[in-house]
Length: 304
Image (cartoon, rainbow, N blue to C red; front, side, top):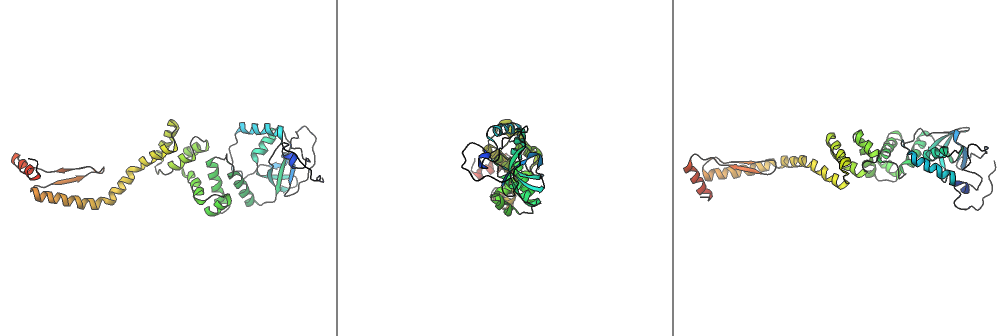
């Protein structure tokens, strides 16, 4: 079918206005079908029945209430943003991006939907689908992390290359990928938005899984802020760091305190024992043989 000459269009008519008014995006299933062009690289209206769901779709969670709201909007305003598909055969297309719009259009009763038609191989399709979804604001952090992982594994990308594809620096990519090392319970909490990305980034610094789950429960039970969680994580890590500090300084401390004990032993004449505990405290043990010996020691240390 020949397209109409370019016409001046108004606002508020949805995509039909953008398509020179030759495509009615609000046509319902009980209306007669209309034939439209299916030119690659152009916006076309194609039958929803001819579209296969994208097998590479990274998004798995579609909120039903939001879908119905979008469907109501489509019934009134039409579909503003076209979906993107690739043509795999005559009258058969595969969705690249826009599954939420496709689902909502179906709920709205549309039999045709405006779409960009592209030529793409499987890897290109995967990359386009993943990148398109990653750039959406409402994609949860676990879905983003899984998308990053798939792009690295299935598209043979390095983290730097992935960062360039999605316009994010390497540290951001790394932080998302680290989320996938967390226990499934914590990943589910991130996915369901029970905890924020900041909470997760603090928890992941804990090596012990039981402690990670303990912190998660504290967040859920007490509605803890990210800053409070960071404080808890630091407290959990403190004994380990303190122990490492003690181990690193132990040889020096042993020599120093032995010298003090030897000096006191020489001065008092009795064997003096000096002990340092892990918390930095300690004690001095000075034995005496009789009351007279005690008086002698006190005289020496000036406590008579």
